[in-house]
Amino acid sequence: MLVIGLLFYIIISLSFVAFIVFIAYLIQPKGAVGERRVSKLLESLGEEAMIFNDLYIPKKDGEMTQVDHVLLSAYGLFVIETKNYKGWIFGGETQRNWTQTIYKKRSRFYNPVMQNNTHLKALQHHLNMDVPVHSIIVFSDAATFKFKEPFQKAHVIQTKHLKRTIEQYKTQEISAEQLIRISKLLNALIPKTKQQKNEIKKQHLEHVKEIVNSKKKKVNAVKTEPITIDRVVMEPASSTSVDTCPKCGSNLVLRNGKYGSFYGCNGFPKCRYTRNHDFNLNRSHL
Image: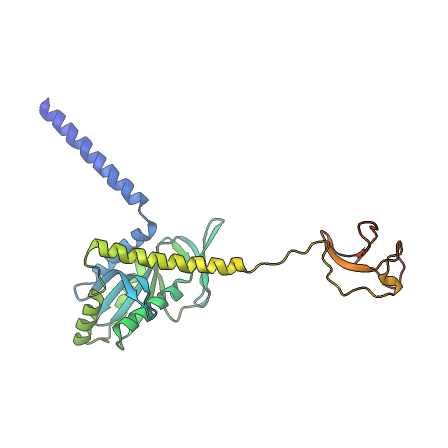
């Protein structure tokens, strides 16, 4: 009985641990799931390919840009941006924002080709070497592309086509000496401790937040002055009869109200005479 009880306890404990691991997998960020899948695919390319994941590369202005994956091989340098999105994906190479549609729900996101182009420029600046760099945008296999035109500056593909896309490059473009030098420069970007990595990530997120807030301030700064019924939007009326109130003889002025423009008596509120804006000036109106 003691042995049976012990076995029962072990089974229950293992089941609980498995349950916790399963829940942790479900609640992890979707982006992390996509990046992990891409990392495993890249590892299957063989020992000749050197993989660098989650790099923070310095830009010309001194700020950092975060790159999901960099693959270094003799056939080129591949900069990979992962988008673990499903649904219909609409966009174009020169469009600033793309659209994801899932049933009737639509959401916009920044053009990943432009985003990865920033990564490419930062990487080329950091390496300071003339080597071929290829941009790859990887979406989930559950994504359906609705692009109207082919892409010229990047490969935009599903995860299942990643390996085939990289393996199509078969001409050696980077020498052994260059591979060693690039590898050292990329390894230097890898944080030595977890604390160092968290600090770099924190600084990067704060910078991104500052950019978002500055854009919001610019939008909020553009305000339109409300027009009220008391605001005169036309030059003073002349002394002709069509610009004179037929009731009190005061001038008529053009005003904006709830239902559009109209002529109102300058003697308001004592005189409440009004006339439609499209009134025919050749007719009298009482």
